[in-house]
Image (cartoon, rainbow, N blue to C red; front, side, top):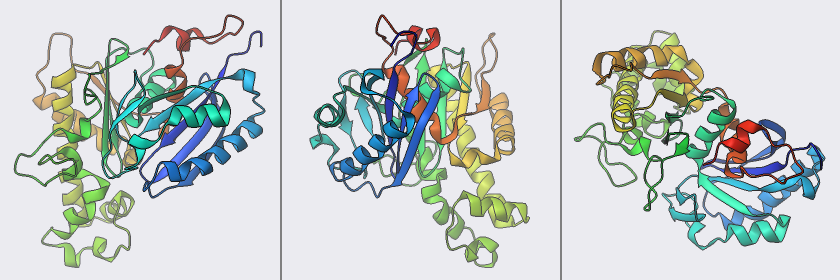
Length: 331
């Protein structure tokens, strides 16, 4: 269609939820969500198909206006070939699932796949906190800790797939906890939502703390206790901020970004968390004459990975008008 940019079907396969959307440039035309236990990728595809079809109908998008299917996946992938290279306790059957065949059968569209944290970084780069920035690190704080790195306006890649996408699995404590990835003392094993109950329960004052009465011990519960001046909650939060700060220094030393973006549900507290992280970086990073990187909160929330989809399909038909921002930024 003349003057109309092509839309993308975006899918974010998370560990606890799946989100789908029809995205046109930097606008979500329609979206839907569903919970998942991430036991089977193949077992979710029929429901995902139905969700996408409902979003297509809601958005009024016709097939000639669709460019492809962008998939964010919570594992190590090869964004160039579309291979899923490694999974970690989520969607263990992913290696046997042919997403290209599924997308062509259901939608007559090609698939491109990327790690979910990397796709979230692409979203922030196209439409959020990382716009007009070429060297960026993103840290996502949630059930686990995700990470992604972009240098020179391109995602960092390696043949084995780990490069740039394992920020949460950088060790910050060589005598720390055994991580689900097999390493010891990873940031994710030391200060993520998944380990938060253990951090609280191991505190000597836990039994008399208000957090002991929480049926679900997540960061929302921890923040409530912090607001009530609970000493245990304040100690645990301080520990987590120390871990995130140490991780930030390590990522800055590894990649030399001009910007570090923090995303994920934990970042609802924004500056309350970012200010001590900035202070730690100020005190401990090896700086150059070009100064310290900015440390900012992500802007797109749970939509970041969905909005990253157009970056995986940068080319356009001659008759369409894909924005210069999306078209010029090749990944």
